Length: 112
Length: 114
Figure 1 (cartoon, rainbow over the protein chains, first blue to last red):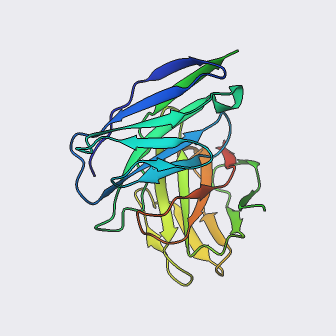
Figure 2: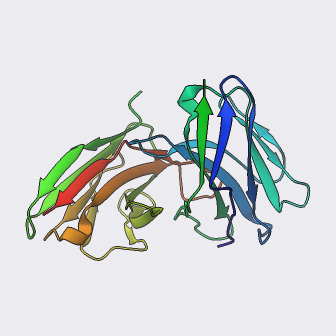
């Protein structure tokens, strides 16, 4: 599976937008880009996913670069509850890409 | 709307004891998974079930067995627990194996083997 690279940590102020970057320069044409987050002492939580086009849902937006070698998860207005580890994961649709490779993710700190 | 429910939430076992971790989902999902998460490491897939009646090994299946009891329930059994199996176990489900589906995770079972 292609790998992803994320910053170890980021910090944001409450009620401000947060842009979490992810590099995936070896992405293949059949890889979906998934984002999950894990709050302390909880199970991972699905956030959003996409293939080529930008995606929006109630939690966040996903901006995918035109060459697909990078993507950005956008939290429009950070709250204290958004403090978590965010994982950018590639899933290959050409085979059973069922094993999520979580990696180390980005630890997001939100300050009041 | 419970999503994925895991029981128990906490468990302490002695080396050599057996136990079964229970998982149930109420979203009519076809596929279910068991992962373990160790400190400082990502999640690792133990077993998965693509659909009712099928199970397959993941990355770290040794020391575990699974049963897909029906579409809703997927249990993980430790036949003879070892300290190396001390971990947090997460059950997850998805509509199918396709990469176009997201997973829903349970809140985890924290297992300590002494």
